[in-house]
Length: 81
Image 1 (cartoon, rainbow, N blue to C red):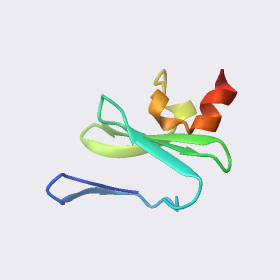
Image 2: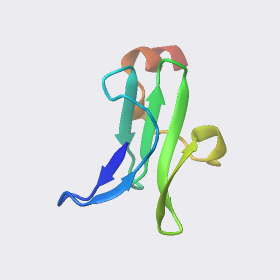
Image 3: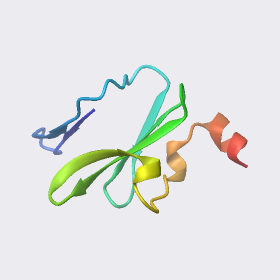
C-alpha cells in the first residue's frame, strides 16, 4: 500500500503484503482515511493520519470508526443485510 500526493509525491509506503489483484477492496472516506477489506479472511484495515504520520490499524482497534458503505463488494453488502 502506497499513498501518494496528487502530484505524485510518495507520502507513505506500508510494509503490508496486500495484493491489489486478489480479493482486496479499498476506498477513501470523506475524512481522508483509506479503508481496505480483504475478502479472503474478512479483515478490515484503516490507514489514517495520527500525529502527522500515516498509520495502519485493524478496524477493530481503530475505535468507533465505521467503514464506508462503498468499501464492501456487492455480495458482502447483501450478506450484511
